[in-house]
Amino acid sequence: MSKITEEELEQLKDQESKKSAILHDLGVLETQKHSLLHVYAAIQEEQNKSKVELEEKYGKINVDLSDGSYETIEE
View 1 (cartoon, rainbow, N blue to C red):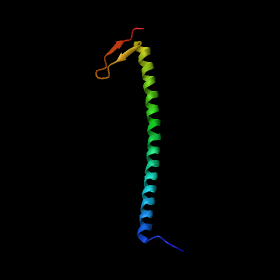
View 2: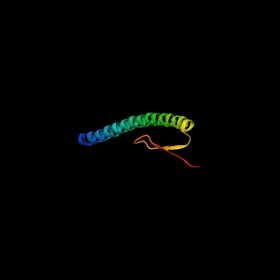
View 3: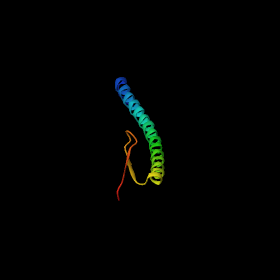
């Protein structure tokens, strides 16, 4: 049976190891991305509830987040 050289074999093993590490890291990143998307959606939902509460109290307004002032939205 014919074989490649030890150097060629080590090169192939090294390349395969690097590919495996990258795939692992991509999996970790996808998991983190998934978690962050859930957190983002929860914050959006919380913000929408806050908007509804503010609208019930003040009517339709635009709030300046730098100082809390607001302007009424004319319809």
